[in-house]
Image (cartoon, rainbow, N blue to C red; front, side, top):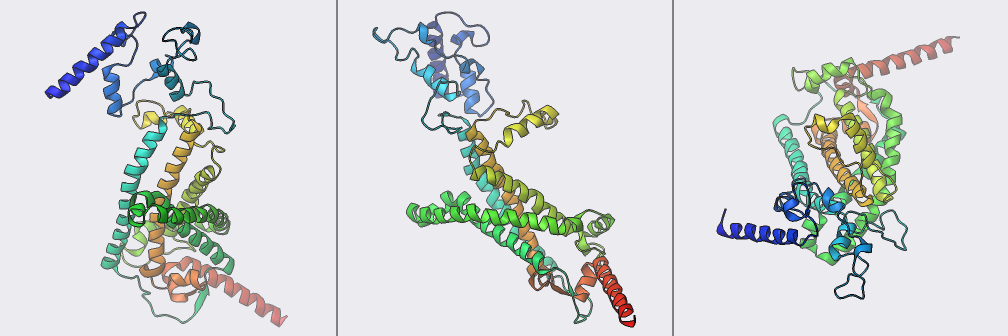
Length: 404
């Protein structure tokens, strides 16, 4: 400890000792030496961002009846000192009235805004950027090592209908809206740190307003498309035994040859459920952000997790906050919305890679809806057998009808 630090420590101790002597009566407990006020250990713990029990401060509000009259020398206004007033405002115990009757109007100070801002400007931006860049790097490396997955056998020149027009419409509506949402979301998330220094505040403001308008309105198309693809494909994406074999062979990367698969293989099923579950979570928090203070998602969730003892499973020393201010609900919603969106965006990067550069013939499934029969035989042999069986049954039924 340096001399300056020692002098600072002594100064703080003297300061709080003086405050203790000014108290009307002694305080009990660990803060007896400070007359009930916070100690140096409290201050150092708060500076180190360690949890501090502020219960003694929440209850230490002034008594208006015991205050000196405002006409007396050094009398207080309103019967409470400034510290009492600010403490009540900080811990949301002040009697605040406003003309705005919104749920967050009477919360004037809330500490949650600081940790949210630090996390948003620090780990969220830093780790989020490297996560997306790393995903693109892994895909590029895989392409250099593996190359494009070609159709192994001889092409037949015959095609099989893989997706109907309505299915392709739902897919492209979902894909297009998600890419727009991802782009405009990244502008909102990274713009202040990276775009303002490049384009300036005024240019970025116009750009950001347009991005926000697109983001808010395109979100409805994303949610509609999400429901559509769930209804169209959920029956084909239920797990079965063929998925285990597909995963053990890594989709054909390990062991050679393409493992048999139905209409959707295990990899596609993982992408489907990632889109449904993560996209649904993004939509839910998006609705909370579109309609501020109307949806309370996190306080009830934290309470249920506390009741189940989840914090104890994770070796947490305390329960998760189940009493949140309206602003804190919005802060949690924004962070969850951003984190889950980044994860889903990385997954979609992989999906786009496979559907374009990564695999020959894959784009045709969503482009024209028709795929080369040999491609279907190699990648979805069980599904192709089902299609051929239906076609043969239809042909037999037509032949019998003609003979009759």
